Length: 424
Image 1: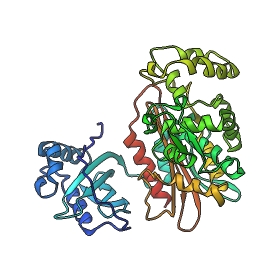
Image 2 (image 1 turned 180 degrees about the vertical axis):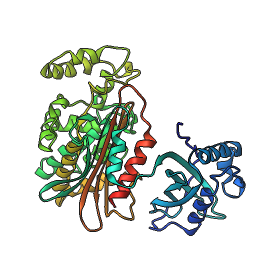
Image 3 (image 1 turned 90 degrees about the vertical axis):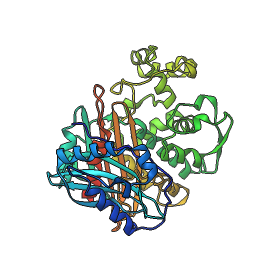
């Protein structure tokens, strides 16, 4: 059965710096857990009216009863992220041995009614990192997984599964752009406050927001880097690639330990990727028929001249046109960033990496959470740089590719979240 997602109506929820959830949130979580039965009811006393206007009682009953039928009643629950006062991520445990991820938000005033609820996939309970790795290895297509500790001696692998196979990364490639910028910051050649101008050649497509900004907008390197990592802004990435130079990023691939650097040469911008994968034209086929140096010339001429407005549907070819790295490559890249961001201007890189923490890692446990992922049809990547309260540094990274079948994002996220919990 495909997991049902409870589509929530999201309203503005008061945020808080509290490191503990409000007791009212605990109560509401327990009440939702009790709805996993054959005859759930009482929605008007639990859910905010705005939520109930978007999700009918019939829909709620259908969802809760189906989960109950397939996985049994909820027997216990635990926080996956308890760092906020009015919303949280939890994992529900059922009588049939499954865990269901749940995100919940309640109103900060009045009766603290539930304003948002999202139920994810049900996954068999996983009790070890080795089991996480095994289950990721059983996914259709090809996947890789690695949990490793960074030490003075290098990487000390804890659990691995297919860690040396290069896989398509999606937007996680932007970590290589960030590492190249870090090198130039540390050398004094550039500074975070340096201003660059958004040019038409760098205007890509979403994700992000800079594609809608006027050409000529002045942007600091710090702003471009932060947008590139935190919201995976494609235009910010392309602007930085053009500013730093394609060849410098290609050199960084090997310097940061990517043993499959040749697969990424020439290093593509996101706009070039969109153009090459544009299904109504044959730019991609022409590109693949060329030798590496001829591909570079092709990008600078034919692809550059192809009108941005003519780009239509772009997807596919993830095994031929993409950015590639293995799990070990990602771990070495994070180690490079960590080693070169200990002090001075370069230390800001750690702040940039921690703006978007994805919500899967528990902030109450980890002193530092750095994150970048990637997602497109057939590609999923989640990559974390973590520091424990004891001061130890870890990398947890997983990638899943399948050019022929859709990927269940919630299933993969559930397994990666469990890996982060078990590593604690």
